[in-house]
Amino acid sequence: INSDYWRLSDIQKKEFEGKSIKKNPVSRVTVENSRKTCTRHYFLPRNDDLIRVCRKFYLTTLDIGSKRIRYTEESRSGSLLAARADRRGSNCSANKTPPRLLKIARKYIEDLPAVHSHYCRSRSSKKYLPAEWQNFSNVYRKYRQYCEEKNYQAVSEYVFRKIFSTEYNIGVHSPKKDKCSICLKFGALTQPTEEERREYE
Image (cartoon, rainbow, N blue to C red; front, side, top):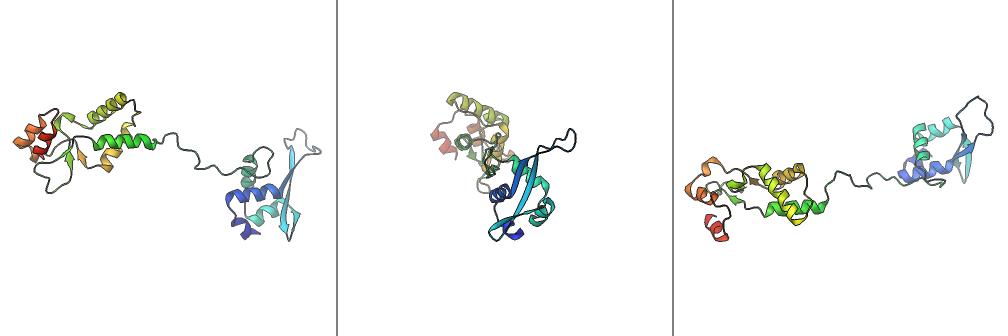
């Protein structure tokens, strides 16, 4: 019985317990002010029949504790014999960012005007944003402005930073060795044209 019981899924175990434990109202209260409102009868299968056993024998045979029985009873749907399905993992976390918002954030990052370092491009694939972007806080601020204009919901700064730093190889500050006249000229352009960008690259 023990091995058959533990081969069952959690839902099947609850159904087995629901069928093998019978609750009956207390017919007579023997202790004054007793809170006991019902009594339980325990049964275990033998051949094609159910044999009544004591509570200790029932728990020992199945190798379960009394908390398991209370958990099953509390999870029943009203008067239904079968226990409710285990709902763990069926509900999305309230703090989880919807995939649609993550997609918008990634698209915004991919459209940023990031370019390769002038001197380091042969040794690194990292790209850098123009000087006017200043720092990450400014990048996130511009992203929020973009979302407001498009009527999108912005992800949190924590989520945006995590995507920016782990999924994309983009820097906000250019390396010091990269300060040549060409880069300085390009960095001074607030809105470089496509032709100017190609010339820089």
